[in-house]
Length: 231
Image (cartoon, rainbow, N blue to C red; front, side, top):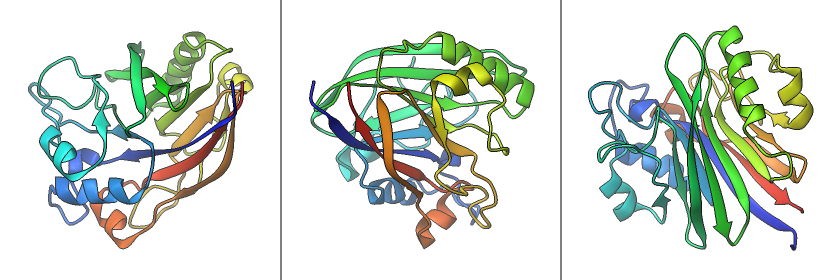
């Protein structure tokens, strides 16, 4: 298989609730569009209560972007599962979706998506726990459930303030990269948002989007990375 490149982004959109205390899905989508990514992984993409309706409406995504929506929701109103959602460009298709329940004090889950088409890649969308002991257990689950021979990228809000994740088994198999300080958007001090890649993937460039719009749209700034995939 030839070498492949793709641009991926991750963004905790905080239910489209900005630092100006306004919910503005159009603004959130404008930030997403400006990332120029092929795949965008979202956290907190759904509202918290009831059936967890999408904070970023399906119709708005279809009408105001070039993205398709990965069908990870388990109802007709959510965009994601446990708030994790994935958008992708034309030329890609989703072959398989797996929901991964994660242990911990608070309900958490990850979504694993096998993508084919212009590339072959497994994307795991994550939003890990606030408590370190829970994050370590969650990384155990994620490490065990992913094939070491598959090109895999984890993307999301890892909620880890320290550089290391505290799970040697996971870190021995996956290279974790925080592209920069992404939290808090008003004064970025921590790289909570990260990528972790298998040995088949090299990150050739990465960064944090720090536009004025992004600094207002959520309490997190989006991150992005250029992935070079070899098999």
